Image 1 (cartoon, each protein chain N blue to C red):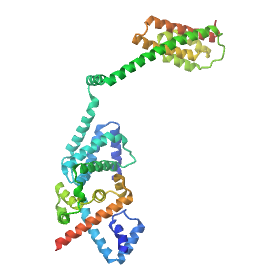
Image 2 (spheres, each protein chain N blue to C red; image 1 turned 90 degrees about the horizontal axis):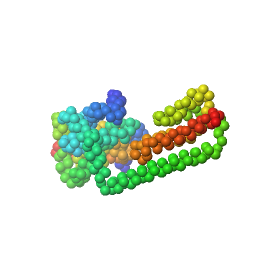
Image 3 (cartoon, rainbow over the protein chains, first blue to last red; image 1 turned 30 degrees about the vertical axis):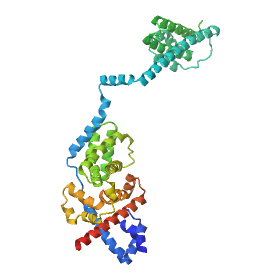
Image 4 (cartoon, chains in turn blue, yellow; image 1 turned 180 degrees about the horizontal axis):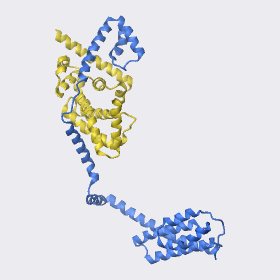
Length: 233
Length: 193
């Protein structure tokens, strides 16, 4: 009966397969059971036999060739990603000529145009609102609410010559006074308009003079704000 | 030695992940024998084992970004190899051969002599010897026996590669060894008779 119980542990004879407790129990059983002792001896023979099989490692005939073939397959698999620019454009054109993609692309273009138009009208509306508010509101006398560093960064972040030219005369003043109110909101708005200008011109939505006139208008308002902040008229 | 090799392999993987194909090439050079030896022991076919080496490393390259350095690279490599080999075996329908319950004499006849082991110089001779031991084992037993007794991996590594529990690995090992032992017993009985 006990022999059946030890059948599994008898077959787990290699290092790390039995716990110390299991190994001790098995050793005790084998010491008193002739049949299991014989089985254990046969298993030792099996282990020696398998060990000799394990000792002979199958070898690749031509390892260099095998490596070269692997690398060639990888390069071939990677190749589509390295097509020439002309091939890539051709593939892109093929892609866009598919009916579904064509309609989807048209929808994206319409959406983009609509977004630009909306943005443009929003800007115009904002300019109007700003002008109205400036006309109605007395000059702000409050202490600076926005640090000079941020403002200067905002100024520097735009490369538009109109904006720079407009604000340039005030830079010294700003530095010497150390505190000038420039309503950052206005400044950001101006920067947005300057960015928008490039887009408008690039797409031919507006005439260059019209855009520049708009910029000048907003810049003038900004200058007015600065003047107010400095206690000017 | 094993630690040094593991460290070298990890360095090569890091380089390969960064897009260095030469590091990957070196990795293939270092590791392809492991893949080949496991594949030939599972498939008994040299040409197919060579194909597995190719497929395995292409797969490794594609999935290298998913490799977790916490796992030994050879464990991950063996797992891919085992999956590829099992796919092959199932595809070519060799499975019925492995589960065959008939032809006991044929099984016994296949067991090679101890002296033939000493003379086994070619892969083909070795394949014959391994086939004699494992060809008729059920899939799980054959897999566990091959990984543990022929590839000399630990029980934990076998469990990690196959996805079996430690206990399941030991149970399958027990059955595999018992079957092989009884085949050897009968073989030597026949030889003596």
